[in-house]
Amino acid sequence: MGGDKAIRVFLVDDHEIVRRGVGSLLDDEDGIEVVGEAGTAAQAMARVPALEPDVVVLDVRLPDGDGVTVCRDIRSMLPDTRMLMLTSYSDDEALYGAVMAGASGYILKQIHGTDLVGAVRTVAQGRSLLDPESTARMLKRLRDEAGRKDPLGELTDQEKRVLELIGEGLTNREIGARMYLAEKTVKNYVSRVLAKLGMARRTQAAAYAVRLSMNQTA
Image 1 (cartoon, rainbow, N blue to C red):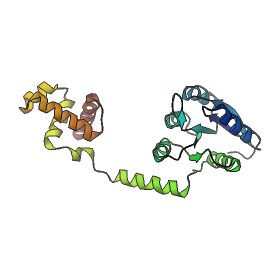
Image 2: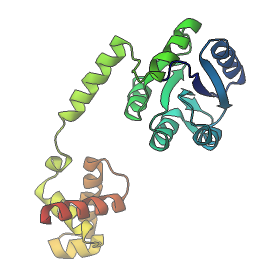
Image 3: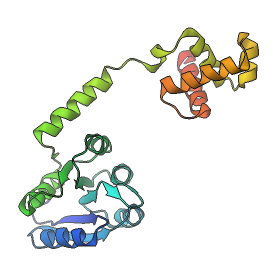
Image 4: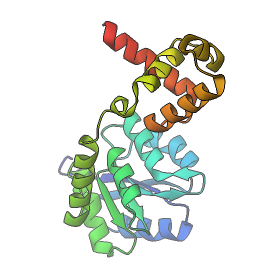
């Protein structure tokens, strides 16, 4: 940030009284300017890209979506815009999602006004804002996820073969004929494969199998 350049802030919260309160607080500060506001995810996505604010103060929960998705989408379009998540709830899932989506800070609405101003200035300078306890929980979760086994390692040989044939576009009946299994048995295998891979649809498994095949032949 340049020395004389005001920090341009955009507010996203579905409660008008919150937007007015935060807006007045920030506008009263030297070097901070509120350039716009939105009450929904759709409004935010329509207005923020055109304004290119330095900081977006964003509620985690919105009536037509969630702030984490908005955060991710805005960051993909405006990588220099800093996202400061403001929420009424201390929620580990939301915290994790926000940080993974590129948020620079995560604070509760119970925060004192001077602390909120400080938070805006902190993230505008490119620094992150997480309390030590939240940071510790985040690091633990990231370490746990990094240590998880490859999903393919959870599949039996039969399930791997079923996944391979799904990738070839075969139906359950065709897979059954190829593997000498009843169609109902194949259906059960497919369900287990999807569950172990954390997928909801057969098409996801097919695309995954094709990528695996391409990687093996590359």
